[in-house]
Length: 151
Image (cartoon, rainbow, N blue to C red):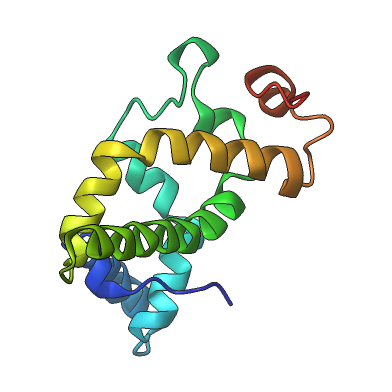
């Protein structure tokens, strides 16, 4: 079972895509499928094509080619990245609240995080995942070429 994301914190477009998937899955299985089960199936099996359709150029480094087509464990990485991203935004939300001495809304913290930290955070996360978690880390070309894991 994967960790489910807090639905109030993800894009309404993604929730709608999961709801559509739930309908198709229920029709195919000829029984009502719960949102949680549809969400899990969507995240594990359809999220990557959905992202490719939404953003046909998802390269993390255009000179290196398309990460989605080159990574054998991207789905597993994304299942770890979603809760890690949510924690990073919650941390930023807390720090902003302390700085302004006022509660900060999730959307405002997420906007701040994306504007100021997401690129660096994403690079560090991918280095950590590819260098320390991925089962192919010692032989993966992305890990060996794209990420200099010597430092």
